[in-house]
Structure formats: C-alpha cells, structure tokens
Image (cartoon, rainbow, N blue to C red; front, top):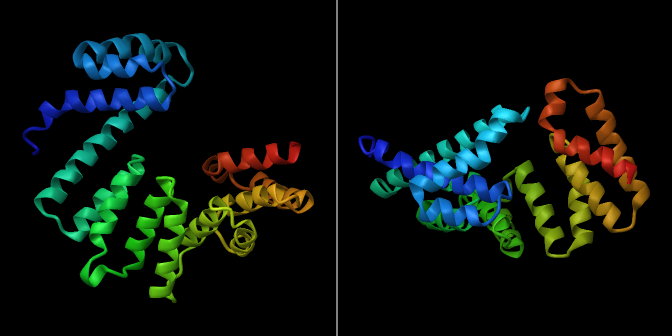
Length: 248
C-alpha cells in the first residue's frame, strides 16, 4: 500500500479539489470538469479558482492550508480503509469510523459502528455513542435518540457530556422541545465550553422565553469577553452567536 502511494496522489488531489469545490460553493460544473477530466480539470480548477485566491486574498495561506488538510484527510481515510480491510479488528474499524465522521461520511461511519457492536462489544458505550453521532450526522435524529436510550439502559453508570448534549439535540430535532429544554438546562450547569448554553438559549427563544434566552446569552458573552484570546478563538462561533443573539 505504501509503495503505491505516489500513484494515488493524482486521485487524492482530484478528490480534494472536488470536495473543496463542493464545500466552498463553487459552481456545480467544476465537479464535472474535475471528475471527468482529471488531469486538465484539476489544473484548470487550481488556475482559475484557487491561484487568484491564494495570490490576492489576505486569507490565501488559510485557503491553501484547508485544501492541503482535505487531501491529507482523504489520504488518511484510504490508509485506514486499507488497514481495516486487511485486518478487520474492532480497533481498526473504529479508527476508520472516526475518520469517516471527520469527513462527513456519516452513513458509512454508522455502518462500521454497527459492525463493531457484536459479541463482547455489543453494549460498548463508546461504540454506541459513536453510532449515535453518526446517525445524528446523517440526519437520523430519531435513530440517534433510540441508540442513546439503549446506551443508557445497558450502561446506567456511563457518563459523557458529549453524549448528553447529543441526546438533547436529538430530542430537539424530533420535536420533543420540553424534554430537550430539561436536558439543556442540566447541561448548562456543567458542560465545558459555551455550546450547550448557546443551544439552550436558542431553544428558549424558540419556546418564547426571550427573557431567559437573553440572560443565558449575556452570561456566555460576558464569560468569553473576559477569557484569554486563545479561548475566544476556540469558541469564535459561539461568541459571535451570543453577540448576534443579544442584538436580535
């Protein structure tokens, strides 16, 4: 597999360009050009779409870095898939499933997690949580909620802040807003970082409790305003959401 890597590089570059074009909202015809004319299409995409951005935009290095990371992620996916095929151990499959999640291949990840929930691993809480993450990412909130219910029944002492947040989000997604509010309210007291509080505030607003929503967002904004710069950078999305929510 390693010796054949140079021959895979054109394919990886093709995949990277196609994924980049899709994620950055480029015109749809670029996908046809990249996929149907691999060599010329890749060069055309780089020359027409990427080089002007890299050379003239202040964020050019970040753009190049993102494309590089996409290519590296695809390379890692191919390597992990190769390893899981040659040695289909639970450990190898789980590494592949995590990479699938990172790449947004949620349906594929869910299938792998299902394969791992066998024998002595049938009730493994970490694998079940991975499956729920994949199901939710694939838009199957009801399935994610059911998986988390099974996890809790099989592992009553298992604790996971991420799992708790996912459960609240699944409840919200299937329309059980009152139950979701209770879960978010509990999460707001201990969840690390501002995501749970921001999601709680948004749900409160949707339920009509604008006063409570504004109070939660104000708390988030105040906390992040006082935080070190590296913390604010880490939570840029939620900081901006708190500010915009208070303005609205």
